[in-house]
Image (cartoon, rainbow, N blue to C red; front, side):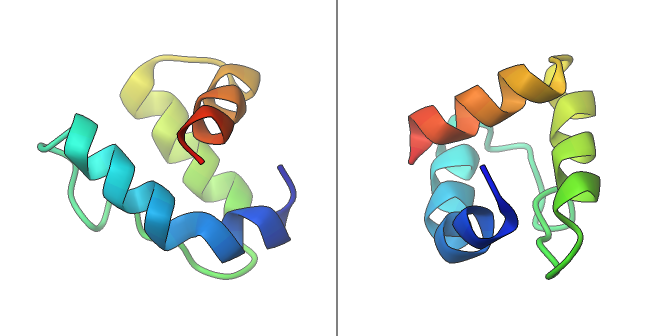
Length: 62
């Protein structure tokens, strides 16, 4: 998933994530342009998964 894919789909993905994980905050899921790796790192920590697992999970949501 490149930054363009993440940027273009992020609002939709964020909504789906919040449906699954109601305790996640907007700060947990805050996307800033150019900060894709930081966001993926936060999600990795929350889920306890590898970077590749997180990317596959996000692709599955989209």
